[in-house]
Length: 263
Image (cartoon, rainbow, N blue to C red):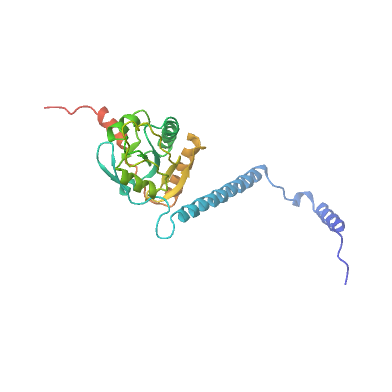
C-alpha cells in the first residue's frame, strides 16, 4: 500500500495546479456578489436565532399551562372600581399585564405602577390596544372601589383596578400563586398595617394562559420588550388578537368628539 502524501505536498500540488490555469479562465467573486452572499448569510443566521428563541418561548408557555390545569391563573370573580363584575373571561382577547398590590403600599407599588405606565406607553406606540393592564388589590379591608379609584388616578389611565371580598381576594391570589397575608378583619387602631405580596407583572395571553413573569429587576423598556415579543409571536402564528381601543381611549375619543348638531 502506498503511503498517503503529507499535507504539505497536497497544498503544494493544489497551488501549482491553480497557477497552471490561464488568468482568463480563473473565476473571481465580484464585490457585489460577496456583499449579497454575506447579507444572505447574516439574514439566515438572524432568522435561525430568532426561530430558536421563539420556539423556546413557546415551549416555556406550553409548560406553564400544566397538565389539564394552568399553574398560574384560573377562575375568579371580582369587581372593578365602577362596581361592575370582572372575571377571568374578561381577560380574553388581549394580552393582560396583571399586578397585585394595595393602595397603602409605601414605595414598591408606586414604583412598579410607574414602571407599568411607562412600559404601557411603549407597547401602545408599537402594538396599539393589544395589552390590558390590571391592578388587583390584595387588601380588601381598606381598598374599597372609591379608595382604589382615587389611588389609581395618580398612575396610567389605562390601568383597571379590581377589588373583592376577603374570600374572593384570597381565592384569586391562590389562583395566581400570590402570597396573601391580609387578615380577614381588623380592630380599631389596627388600620395601619402592611401587606406582604408578590412583586411581579403576570403576562397572560389572549386565551387567558400565563406566559411569563416580569420582575422588579426589569426596566420599563425591558418589560415592554418582553410583552411585545410575545405579541409578535402570537401574530406570527396567525392567532386573533383584539385591538379594540382600551376604555380610557374610548372615553377620550368621546370627549373630543364634536357635539351632535340640533335641527
